[in-house]
Length: 489
Image (tube, rainbow, N blue to C red; front, side, top):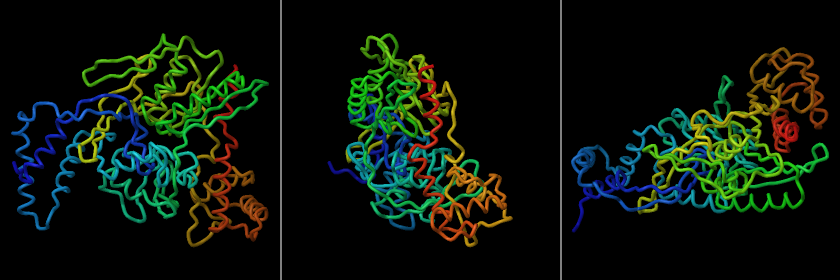
């Protein structure tokens, strides 16, 4: 039987509405943070393509979709591709759900996603989400161009290369941000607490999916392990197991697990990691479906570790990171840092049969004690912020340099950055006084540039690059220092 285009559309839309029976395992659409569809989320990679039953019951409802299709095809001024109408119908239905974590992923987006969870991808390396209609950075990835450029969690991306993102869905916005290695992109950023937007120029690169790093430090004469997890991807569980075993073989007497800036990832990987840490008498987490039915997930671990553990979190810790943090908190371990992002739902990638998928929220996850942290986040047991300069923005010098007796928010930001590098500006309120001028001259002299005392683009760029390098090297990491200090108390 030959189907008409209209019938094909009806079948596709019907499949969208009916064609999913959930399973649960966990997969994050962690695309180039800029291109990320989901937010650091826990998502489900398994799905059942059985379309289920009930299609005949919906035929009457779908006739309106068929009618709209006919009206557009027959009357619209310009030609419209069938694919455009079909995918528009899908995106429209998903938009009515009002769920920022639910979205349609076309064939290209799914290919990009599959590449990213397996090895590496090209882009700026930042997890993004749609928050209140705004494309928002969840977290830049460790060592990525986005991190080097100073992007921070909750930064809003207003424009890409001068083109507004208004009206675009997250997938479309991500496509604008993503690009080939070596290409340049200019993002206009609005940051909380900063009056005016500012531009950031980023050179895209290959972003390797390396997710676990470990080291040891001596703390009060005790060998202490530090494990940093930057994402929960396919091999993260194996890497964590291997590196934890190596640390224990070295005889560590305490452990810090760092998930700051970790946007999340695969649910099953978070479970695998927690099975090394949470004993069998307490659930690792709880999963609740739409009917309110709750399933508890347990490990087979006999007892807690015989050494103290603390977990580091910040506002960029989301999804699977929060599963780990809140489980450890419920076990009585210290959580150090700032309140996390707050994502307590599970998404499933449901194949559409043509290489595209629908990422659909299907479940809630709860803490071992039944707490739902969605939109609330995990609160630390020990709250600690980083030094003020960690939260500075790129220096924006326009036509005229910053100079003595001027006052501006931009100068205040520059003073914070210069002070962070060890130059005494005397103040950080935005007034460029003589002491600030002397601090600028000292910085210029130390870096073999003309000591004018004015901050032009060259001086501003150098201040910025040195500060970014200092942050990346972990200097003045007050959160880590506090975690290590409190570990053996």
